[in-house]
Amino acid sequence: MKALYRNIFFLLGLIAVVVMLLTFDMDYRELWHQIKRAGYWFFAVVGIWLIIYLFNTLSWFCLIKNGKTPSPVGFWRTYKLTVSGFALNYATPFGLMGGEPYRIMELSPFLGAKRATSCVILYVMMHIFSHICFWLASVLLYIIMYKVSFASGILLAVVTVFCLLCIYFFMKGYRNGMVVKTFRLLRHIPFVKHWADRFYEDKKEALQQIDAQIAELHRQRKATFYKSFFFEFTARILTSAEIFFILKILTPDVNFFDCVLIMAFTSLFSNLFFFSPMQLGAREGGFALAVSGLSLSGAFGVYASLITRIRELIWIAIGVVLMKLGNSKKQKINGWNE
Image (cartoon, rainbow, N blue to C red; front, side, top):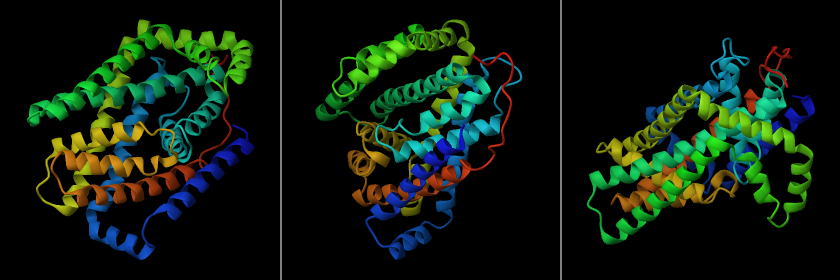
């Protein structure tokens, strides 16, 4: 990647850190008091994301490697791009406007632009697909653990139908590719249709090749697909450990399965507001609704959202720093270029 583009992404990450610091709804002495209150559990909250990002990386690395040995991109470079990409996603509206272009530009010298784009798109699809399956599994978990009232039954039914529809469309996308269809849809949306029309006509062949690579994974490399899904779904479950550690600060009576439900509902609610940079307000609202729905104290949700914001700030800062590390120039590996 050219240094200019990397510096633009780096600046975007710095802006995100500043915005997060300015949007904490309390003074810094109170923030420090809350961190001290958390004690050693705070290090567990921050540290669990080393493992979560490890599983994210394993999922993406499967897609990049795609059965080839050696991998065209090293594992730890992939880990770095995973952390930095997610850090940028927090900084931008619509979630994918920062991290994914950054990852494509960083991978292109190793894989070529088309292969890099398909690898990033495949991982984005897997990341979203695992969220949907996590939400669906959480519906079943709720039914097993709690008595379902009429109101909660309607909500669970709506979530189930939504998830099943999403899974149906994702499986169609995996079988046939979805990039070309996405651009055909964008050509009918106001404000972006003219840009999408020009881009589609100019890059039609490249977009079709990317779709072919996406479809090839599901048709010919099912083992890679399911292995990638396993790692990404495991990462979803591990995010519940963060809630478990936070609630341990407040009460010794914590059920891990409740934490899974809180994480599932919070991520579903916050992803409905994907257009919000850093999901400001959406995450907090999701926590509050989730804990109240499980008959827990509303204070638990407020505290959990605060500690989560602090953890996000730390990992965004780490991701921004990683953008500047390990950027020595490498030669493209034969057989992986365009």
